[in-house]
Length: 336
Image 1: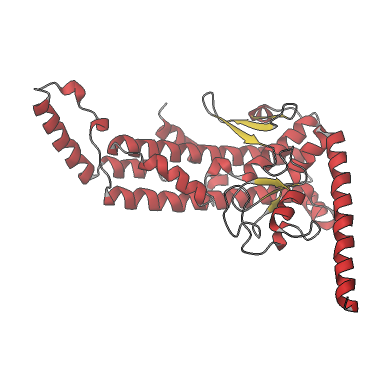
Image 2 (image 1 turned 90 degrees about the vertical axis):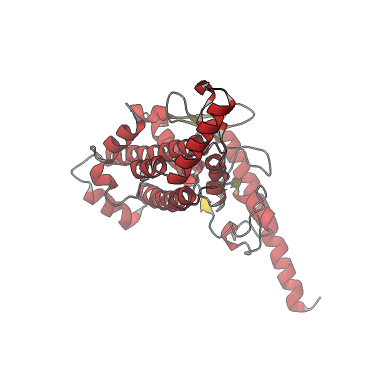
């Protein structure tokens, strides 16, 4: 089955009620625009005629790769601006849905009671699993649609503009399969799997913390697998109390605070606007940082001794920082 048919079936299948308020890639319409592009067609025809003359009628050498088009205003305007908007909308929808799902999972008190009251006639854990599966399908199918339409763009134009657009998506923090919320979703379901809850869905995720490079792996299809490093780029050790900055890079809380020159108890969000990510050097990523609660829970359960030791070290560092802070405040107050 062609991907266009698969994508249509996904949009109008059993999950149509779930996708009602969710953005999606206009895959078929964009393919029609690309197919009907007059500039590309004129270039293709003229290039074909020229090649036929040069190759004395040998048409076997004629292919879209044999011509180059630096820019096509019609395709550029239709594809890159629209894909950027669609990817941004999809990323925002995915982020808000996952945040809501995990918020109910970790909530307590009245919020937990209201959540359970609403689901009193159903299996709340099964509901969480089912919604998570739909979210994973939603983000992976749309990411595949974007990848395929950009590949088609490059094939028609004989260019690498589509491939380069992926870097633009990463710079704009809208690359769907690199979202830290996808890692949080994976950590949540790996924790459920550790608790002995069965399900085919759990097999999409795996986590290896035994090697020198701890990884979380997500299998999208038989040919596509994504790996997410769980190593802090500062201390070069397994993440502890992890935070994802606005750019998507993961760090231990203490390491992120140290890089931004703020105290651990203040947290990464208190960093100044000018603070840069230690990896990509992007500015203004600390206020948008996210505490990876589910990932921390997974690491705590699977690396108990390591997690306990790191907790002891972080608390000792917090006491040291608090002591130094109050010593400075005292010296400033007494005038010495």
